[in-house]
Image (cartoon, rainbow, N blue to C red; front, side, top):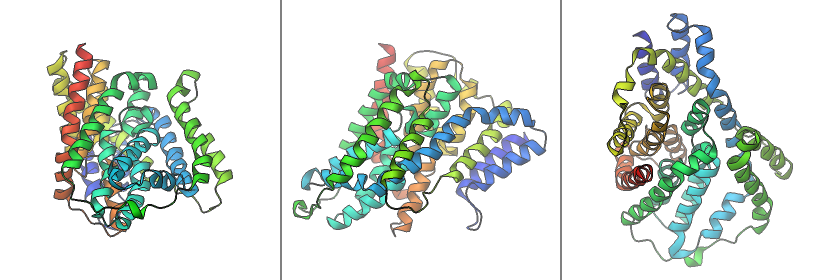
Amino acid sequence: MLAVILLAGAVFGIFVHPRWLPYWAPPVVAAVLVVASASLTIDEARHALRPLAAPLAFLLAAVPLAALLDRLGFFSALANLVDSGRHLGLGLWCLAAAVTTVFNLDASVVLLTPLYIRIAVRHQIPPLELAIQPVLLAALASSALPVSNLTNLIAAEQLDLSSADFLTHLALPSLVATVVGYLAYRRVLSDWPDSASRRDPVDRRALWRGGPVVAFVLVGFVFGDRLGVPAYAVALMADAVLLIQVRDRRAVAIPWQAAALASGLAVTAAAAVQHLDVTTLLGHGTGALADLRVAGLAAAGADAVNNLPALLVSVPSLARSDQIWPLLLGLNMGAGLVITGALAGLLWRDTARRLELVVSVRAFSRWGLAVVAPGFVCGLITLIAMRQL
């Protein structure tokens, strides 16, 4: 049971650690101890890391891709394009949903949060009311494609799922959750001032330069697997094109910390799953009640221990491969109810804090319950109805 204890300690250490200790260190230390204690052999650890190779390669290429587009001015130009008075909230909501779906939720949170805060200040809107959008959509809009979420990428690699599989099963539930989430979001907003006169000019040149790259990326992410082209290869090709166009030659941050964290959790979870009877919890049944149980347990697991370790423990324990769809929906959307449910929530908190926007755990959960919860419920009902029909 040492592996189970180390997994619990690794997850706890991500959220509660001294300031001098990086957040990725506890999972890495736990993985080293798992191997050193012979709870897992080196070959078994290598086997546990193999399914993460392609997902982490994508993460390391996709975040710089989004950052280069940001330096090109593409996201600012899109934001200014939708920055028009009374439709401001809806336009920015759609932008955040699209960026989350196509580029990955972590890139959306890191790049759009500062932009949305600047727009809120310009329009004299409470900053949190716009800044919260990217992290809410990190939960609601991150299930439709494998590239949208690291959980999707890992599941796709382990179960050999394609973009077409995700679009078939999770695109409509994600769309429903995003629409219902917006309707719920509008209900909790304050009265915004008339801001039509404060609209900034749109940088058409940035749109023309970045648009073809985004179109190439979208086509590559959706259809690349049919041609044997992995998502990380598509992202790397787009990176190369953007490096030629971008004038700002500062080094682009590569999220190696997230890769180290995911690797450490994968090794520790691989040892722990040998002693955890998750299959009994998930069950072997079929039908609406079985899907509801899997999605509910997934959401509870994400909120309790973060959705990444919950996924790593659950996927090997699935009694049937088609349980992956309610499992992913629960992991991805349920994680938006608490700030520690996904790494995106922690990245959003740190990004907002650097811009002097401090949000308590309780305040974040109020937004999650008011916006993400109804979207999750409606998305899950849609998924169950689709599976029954």
